[in-house]
Image (tube, rainbow, N blue to C red; front, side):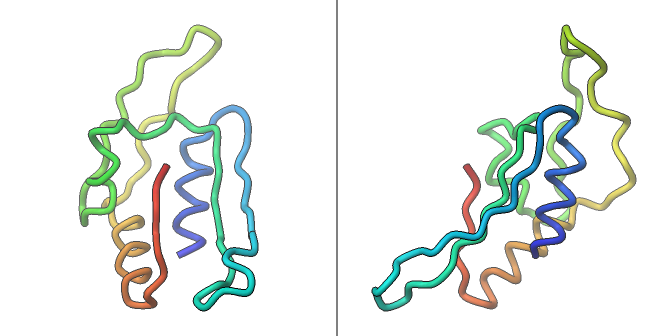
Length: 101
């Protein structure tokens, strides 16, 4: 799961960075544990596509306008649109919450 999230973050972050965070969550409460977060300064995902990116074989449109300060994204690398679908399925099987912001 973590690998798929990091690969996506790295693939779509041309400037800035990617942060992997591990935080204590719900300390002292039943169900408390750890929260793993992946933060990036990538191109983002349009609100209309945020639910669909977890669907099998779906890839959000990669066409982005050329930024004024440099080149845009490289041509889409070969992929099937399964990475985030796998993450979601595993999260459900393991009863781990998954969120996209």
